[in-house]
Length: 147
Length: 147
Image (cartoon, rainbow over all chains, first blue to last red):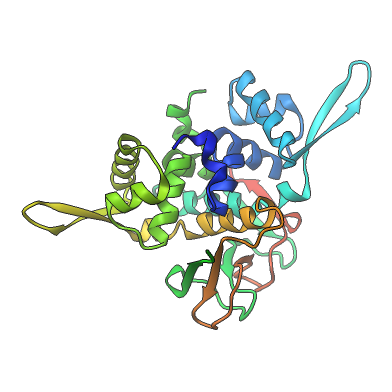
């Protein structure tokens, strides 16, 4: 199967990956959550080649993940902001961050610290079950195809 | 910057993506969490071309995400199982699933149902803060670079 057909798979993971399953795209999203909004800043902070970055931003806008807004006229300048659909990718980005912190930094301290403004603590978010409130262990979850 | 150098970025997201930031790899992981273990089953269920699948499995083994175990002799046959490092990717996969369910299925029911064995409920895991126990909203989190 080719990747161009992957969105047709009856699987939400595959469909999600058809939009965000690209490494540069994930770095763009990481930056968007760090409040980066302008092309030049995305370029410097991700290190993506300019044409690649332009294409990824366009795809994210086309898919409703980012919104392109004009912030100045003459010359026209645009910035990119997360939509609700985009903001809802936070668990994906933060889970990658957490995994990288835990398994890929060697003995070094994690390079980014997350602080939960609600309680003031430094923290690493974890998955919990909204029904019972317990932390979720993958071995405690059954995944069943509906069809 | 080329992707081959991305793991050198001082960013845990980039480092994580250097191992799992590939769409076929994510589908392989999805299957591993659905308890798929054998090459033929991965092939049928992901639709990945065989050489691509072989390469992705090898990379995941080399990076300690999957473990390759012989399960029969004459002929030698191997299966692939998640290590602790691999199992720790569950939040990434489940967050992609959840986002795909919410934003990419149109009006259809999500194709996969998750049931939390601990409480018996169908559920969609959410991120919570281990310090205060509250659900995490990205707007309530400050990310600060340490260096």
